[in-house]
Length: 167
Image (tube, rainbow, N blue to C red):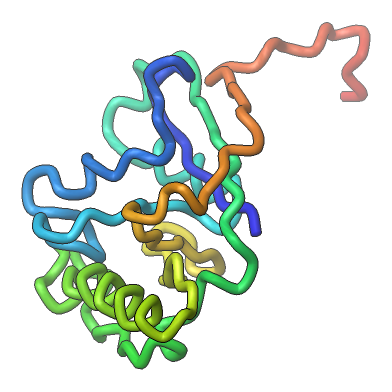
């Protein structure tokens, strides 16, 4: 399965398998500062949207997007892991009950490993796009992940010459 991560950084400075930012400050929506998690998107457009919706977009020249291969069948649903999505999962700031999902994922990964099963992540809803999903991946398993493609997107793509426009 392919998942996507986008960054404001140039390719040379962007490690799409680095989860260190997820434990900066107080963690993110689905993890606290004790549980590093690699956030990814199920579709490329959501990965882009997650970056451009943050402050500073007007000063950005380009985005770098990485497509990452994750083993098929290794990303499960919350239900598969016996986890419930808290009713306040989408409020700001993120509540501790939503942030506990990352730690619960890591515990489920460890339990599965003792049983000889591979779990790399869990699918969670996106706050930004109600029809798309983010993926929380276990960064301790980065050897299971492989960057398969890099894409650079300019903020303002070149304009089509007027002679080619239909309107």
